[in-house]
Image: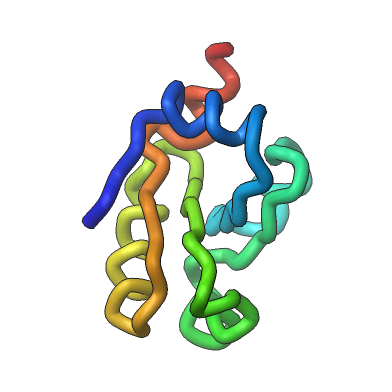
Length: 95
């Protein structure tokens, strides 16, 4: 599975238009999220992943990187190109 550190991701995020998939639950997403992120909770991902463009690279984030790693494994098995953002939103809160 491809992974990127939060710091390296954030540099890209600030300078490029990225597809960011946040797999935290809706209440977590509503409390704090990165602008432009699409919320597809891991608990519902099997039913909602087809909303994603298969021809685009997607960065996947959660709170710490555990759920996003599981989401990346699932999405890559479905034929999506994904990169797990290590450290997740906990790393963002430390900025």
